[in-house]
Image (cartoon, rainbow, N blue to C red):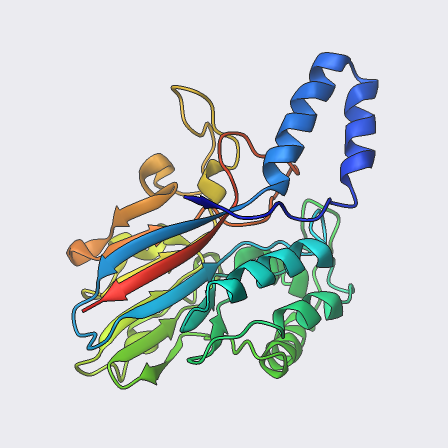
Length: 295
């Protein structure tokens, strides 16, 4: 893994550290280490043969930004700069853009994402925290369900497209003559349809974007490559134990890295960039993934 510069300081860091130190030096030190690990990210470089490609393809994969709770514009700016510096052909974002109350303004996030540059485009899918931010249901953070959540989703889908990030909602498109890109709705919304996302692929190589890896055992057929996030790699990992908690019905099976789905489909599960629940990571560095795909 190639290190890249640390993200700018999180505006909450000083306040969180102060609270931890008030509870004791040992707890404060642990909290400071966890905050430091959450604030740094690396560029992970991976390679894969993707049958059907006629020319190499460089894909930058960002996921789980979680803008709004512990992540703000300076962190997103650093991630965007790092992605652009890799000069990818295609940029994909695997959902959980937002971690905000349904009445909050995502304009600073959109302004940063609008700076992403790739000749084949930038595309994303929604994740479960995006749906929380739309107001689809009550949340543990105090957000309340909104009867107009679907209209808010539609409005944000349009706003993301205006920022240069079309959202693939059980849909796909040919991004190159030899490559079909599909994207599915969030698995937890019970509306995930990879068949619709891959319809039209024909003989092209296929790349499927899904926020949640739990769709992998139930793929309707073989896919060239699936990219996922959601798990954060467990976010907090312990020596010799791994992650005590992974938000997946399959436990550790799809926690992070290279895995396999139905029909032997290769999939990569990113540790993501932001944090959820607590602003800490341990032995689980945030990542921006650069994949070099060859036929």
